[in-house]
Amino acid sequence: MTDRRALSDMLIDIADGVLGFQPPAGLRATGLEVKLPVEVEMARTAAGPEFRAELPRFVTRTAFDKPPSRLTVRWAEGTAP
Image 1 (tube, helix red, strand yellow):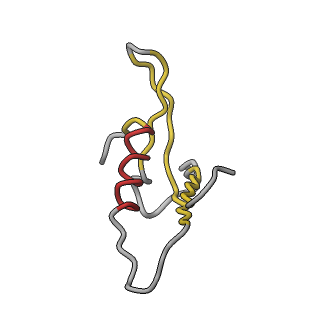
Image 2 (cartoon, rainbow, N blue to C red):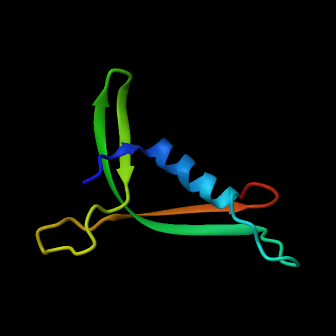
């Protein structure tokens, strides 16, 4: 089982993966949207409350498990929305 980490750390790892994507020759990506299931919790730290998140720990779910949250991250070239 994996421990949840700071939400900001998870987002940095996702961004690193996206930045490492090399499109085929002749194709230029101007935007990307990633939708992921995540398990989120709020933890108390010395610096204050912190959101922690991780991909779901189990592939199968039972009726007793809370459904994972959904995280949508969008990267786009150009101006902010």
